[in-house]
Length: 314
Image 1 (cartoon, rainbow, N blue to C red):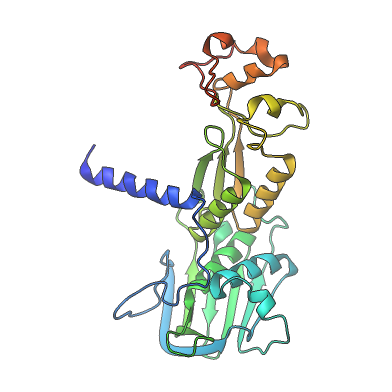
Image 2 (image 1 turned 180 degrees about the vertical axis):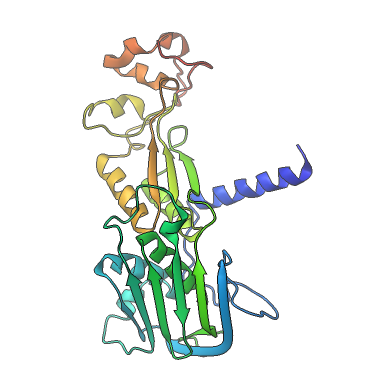
């Protein structure tokens, strides 16, 4: 393997581990200077928008003096990004009457009543964001994912001032005009919870990382020779035979919660049930034992069920 390619693969592995690690969490409070530069010549945004123009004005405001005008469907994602921008507990700190220093108007065309359209297409994440020198921010998007990406960009444009007045926030390089959409419609992360179990809260932290990294798909690989930790309404006893332990199971409600958690954050869950091979674990279930050839010759006693090196299905 070429040294350059090896370094790239190592970097990708580190990013993936960071996203699924139990240590991953949104920094609270957010860093005052998320992007350092000795002499920035404009907004530093990641990823770089496709089109952006800006000037040199600044606008200062207090955390609680921000007002949103939006469709009710957007309330949860707005609260999520308020916590990303200002630190957790923003809603509680700012529960009283607010002045409209910074006014954010979201023009949501709502061409689809669904949070996530059925296909992966860059146009579903298209948005425009404009902000003038007087604290008027306008966001326009036709689909929900576009609103999520716009709020992510806005969270990067707002920074806490670095002087002694820590309650003040600011936007620089105003007025600013941004138009953006991704290059690729599908940008996914695959997590294998069949070979190694991850608790639901850990998966939710990984989804937070996907949101901030603008991934839009969580490929959930949940069946293998090793285990099938998913509960089934059709075969309610199955998981008792196919999970690593009774503490390493995803209930039906767990799955519903994770799917909704991801959906609100602009991430679609793609479940994968592998077959016809890699189903050795089904041999532990009495009703399915006859479906799995050569099962008893390859039963592991280690507690982690390893299957044979070839497809075990008859």
